[in-house]
Length: 554
Image (cartoon, rainbow, N blue to C red; front, top):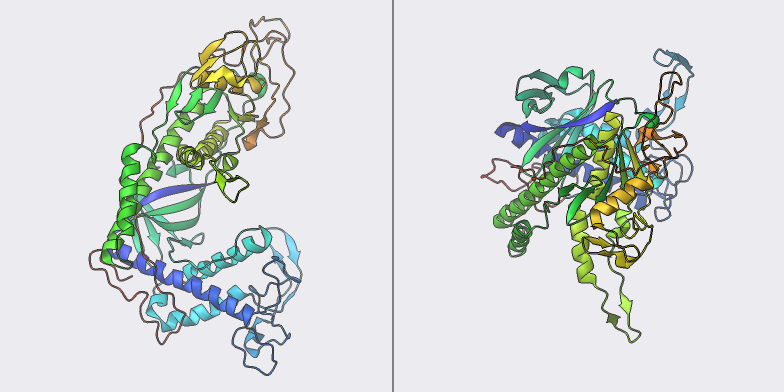
């Protein structure tokens, strides 16, 4: 199975300067390629006798996202009038009949009439590497991958309904293809990676125990987050996923209820504390102050750059704290029981803005937009969706199941009599207006969520001599949908008659830590730069400004 590992790089000053120059040049390279295609789309040659400037067509409907035929004018060299320029005659290729040893199939000969836009621009980029030293120092495969990323953006636009490719003012990553970057020797704390065009760079070896099981290293992505550099490696690890536990052999189940005051409430009565990485008073005040500091600085000044760096450091630290906290919480949840039951929440709908209310006189009524905005910030700061994703991944590796149930009335339903009423809950207290049952509101909700899964246990297990096994097993009538891929397609058995609630205490005690993760990572900010096309006569520097403090020329 392929997984992605992230490591923190430890580059020297020379490595940092080189990688920052690369990012500036790659940003301009992508923007130029996009601009060239757009110009070819909008001002392509209508006249046959006119000089061919851009070899790209212009007859698709961008507004409707329609491609006519098998080609897109923004990604292929077809012209409006159907004339093919002589420069593209090299695109005529005829393949020979050959036998593919990997698939065992015979590949028939074919004729490739035209090269795509990326292929043509790759040829131009190769010529540009010999004319410009800033393009010459970049590894050729990285430049080609930059154009492939632009092609992926067009594919996402036409086929997957995403936004049209836009010009970028900041680029923070570049990618090496499989087999190009090499992992060197490793020791207790550090290892080295060879990046073509950059050299050997040390990184923090945070997975020294798992490197031995790596069979293959795929693509490698170098990224800049804040003022630090990271490397993302896709590796092939065999036997990473354990076989899922059959529902008939499930011994414990835990329901979880996510919230704001209490981040997670467990059906065993325990809680996971919400550390509020972004909305606590100290962090919120620091963020607000640094945002105001940026607004008061002159655009393009050095002081504004310094203020942007301070703000980005703060935001990076917030994200790191939230990520570390969510991993700890998800790990505690998965270790608690064999089955995890959660609510199937539509978080995107929960954080929508309050709709305006018209008073019929040309004005608006009060709609609680300010309070809703604060609630939305708190929900986003919790990162419920991120916690659910981490739970699904950890459960998949451990061979456990995650069930998502309908969240309707989980906070209002009484577990004793089944009475549903909004008045049953008041803050963190639950008091049934029908039977008088009392409990902590979040704990009660988590137990209701666990019960909705239909997983219940027998009161007394009576052993009968039927093949040496017990005749009464755990009930596995799953009412919700399985949230992890491993459980898809399973059909549990029927419910036993004598049952206990799913929160019967059959959970594994886990020592939970609720402290936040302290990160020393910082952020990096760059102001907007003037974009320029690839005029090699003028293109002498990726950026005219030189910042002495950070030792870079980009």
